[in-house]
Image (cartoon, rainbow, N blue to C red; front, side, top):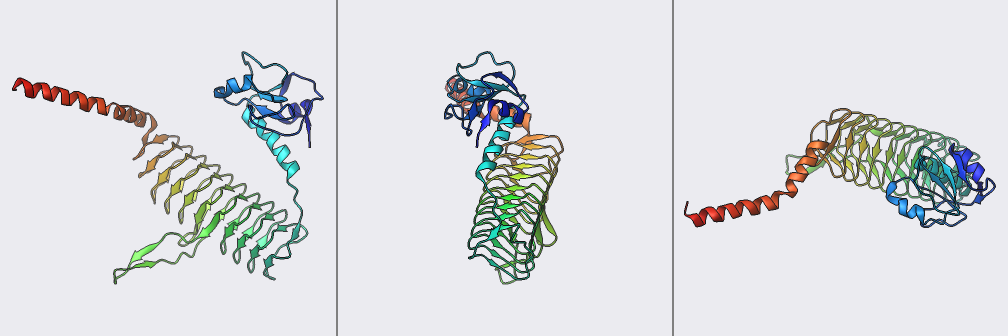
Length: 345
């Protein structure tokens, strides 16, 4: 597959600044790695030097740059990163071919509702009793789909995904390799005999439309009721979401974050990498939790927090700045103390 400069401008809604409209590219790459047959983009001023030395054939650029490299075609767009994603989707779609059919090694219970002419099921995948799989869905190799799972249209499950019994997926859900949806929640009580006793986890997980789940992420089923991930939410790799958690619409949850049981997260929340959120809390809509934040109390709406325990972002920055001065302050106090001791006071 290829794209001409003219087609790139049309696909991204941009304006050609220079170059032959018939110039073609055949893929995408970073500024330094791109060849004359590939497109790239300048989305961050940190990479301006890379931009000046790029060999890319076409580069998407923001308005008003002070300098441009030679022998490169440029398309001006309002948001180069977003526009570049349109190119990535184009070339990705051209390399991925959805071919319906059931692999002969797949095991599908006869009671499952699945149209083999409109669904793909990969090798060694197992689909349990009374499942319902929507048209256009692509289930990769070695996936495990438990009994009574429902799945909407045009979902994509990569290899080795596990969806446990009775869980529900909306349409256009994408799940990366190794993710587990509906594992038992971490629930134990201390018994009279001094031993922990497991609490049955009889609820489900429900993923809304257009949810993305990263590799090796785990989303626990509810003790009873539902663990919910709202429409359009994007979850990175290696994220743990506990039982009965409710995550709102269009949230971002970045790698190595964990949300303990029964916490409610509002809509449009950003949870950065390595954030830990305690259980039974409320995280307000449109709030932001910066990387490595430890949340032990409710977070209001439209707020930015950082640190452990979490503090308003500006307060946390001041605390961090003060902490960095602590060694010098201790040294200064010790110096005053020695002076006082030597003076005999």
